[in-house]
Image (cartoon, rainbow, N blue to C red; front, side):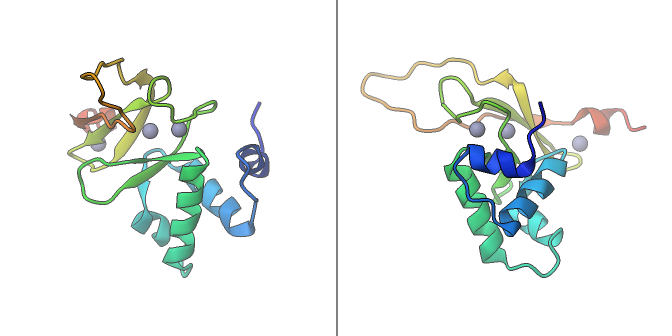
Length: 140
Ligand SMILES: [Zn+2]
Ligand SMILES: [Zn+2]
Ligand SMILES: [Zn+2]
């Protein structure tokens, strides 16, 4: 079932450059969503613009989604398999831990269906629940 990183890119019509493969691999290790600065740190001396462009390409092609968790810096996370970032079907709830500062995807918790006033159109939705994550409530 598990595709190689290269297959994941080509499946989304993204040309698998060495840099993009590295970014995808790094994202796949993350337990929580990661900001551009955090990504930059794990890349040593790689240039920020290149990383930013890779993230933007991934986002446009529906490989990652960005999360506005209210901290000021957008965070990025890989989309679950089969996700098209479709507002009616694919968007899930995010959780921001006020204790450790991490932001988690909760892919099995979908944003509930909502209705809008006449002639209003939704383009995106962002549900972020804030609190304390399991790790912070029960430290090992
Ligand atoms: Zn998505
Ligand atoms: Zn926490
Ligand atoms: Zn997410």
